[in-house]
Amino acid sequence: MARSDPEVEVAILGAGVAGIAAARALAAAGRGCVVLEAKDRVGGRAFACTTLGAVFDHGATWLHQARENPLAAHIGPHVDHDTLRERHLHLGARFATAEELAEYWRAHQAFEAALAAAPLTPDRAVSEAAPRGGPWEATIAHWLGSQINAAELCRISLEDYVKTGLEGPNLLPREGVGGLVARLARGLPIRLGHAVTRLDWRGPGVVLEGPWGALRARRAIVTASTGVLAAGGLRFVPELPPEVAEAIHGLPMGLLTKFAFRLARDVGVAPFHSARRAVSAEAPQPMSWIIRPFGEPIVFGFVGGARAWALLREGPAATEAAARADFAAMFGEGALGEGLVTRWGDDPCFLGSYSHARPGHHASRALLARPLGEGRLLFAGEATHSRFAGTVAGAWLSGEAAGGFCAADSPRR
Image (cartoon, rainbow, N blue to C red; front, side, top):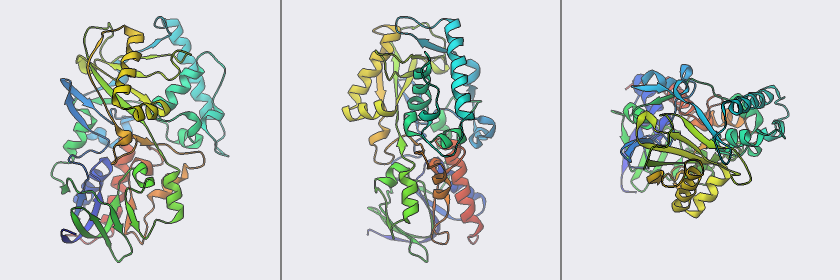
């Protein structure tokens, strides 16, 4: 190895939301730590930059359930998206009327009420408890599955879906969620370009290794995604216990690919409003769009689940072309200018967007959060939070908990 640093109290793998929260908790308690980040930036899956002339969140976009979201306490200028957004549903040749939209939302509420009332044991896929056969059910299932949870409802645990359900307010920061998270990382002991490839946790402490060298610590907090962990992107010595490995594989990463375009012309939709197509034979897996956030001349959108993975394999040009075609089906050709497409699914630092639980694996979130090796090794991140999984709130709270655990059993500086 190139070098070996003196022992530190806590080594945190990853400067995403969970890693930043853990480091802040340790700093507040007067404990020492170092954050090792593989990329050349902070934020992980919360990353914003000024693209196409406006701030664009490549990953996390909203602060959901803001009254309970710890990041809401740090937010700057923002809007409550729920108070500004109207949803436009395209029915193939036209947008739905007010009466049709009201009918759709009644069906949507009945769909979610049926899931909330369904027995959670024995656990099964959400699709097995969902209403079927009505005129709106396919569109609702596609929205709640692929477009919200980044995986089809047939892949997702009903227990996990119900217990991690989200409500408003849904806040949209002017600086982007990524900008907010980057601001909260300022002043922390973060080393960029420090990928960790091997973690020896045999004791009495831990040793972390990468192309940059080696580092010894009393404890390690690992915030890598379950996609990276399942793919063997980090080698553990000794190997993780079988039940922990099973928990990781029970919490796979879904994919929600985001894209953004400059508007080439006005499409007649007010800022912050959304538009999407109903599921049909012509549009079996439609996309979702937000029009002119903060009045900027851009739109951004999403494609999730199986279609997102398929388009990822075809490449960014295929995703961009599919997105342009989806938008054109609603607003005509020539509305979109320059664009970009994110690639969370094949970025080796993430290998997906956020986790979902396979049937029978809601409890895997709590299991993965338990300290190992007499507290030498801890996992944090959205996948380890049993209430706010899949969100920056879950990542932050899990990081705070891991940092607090280490702080409670570490000597002061």
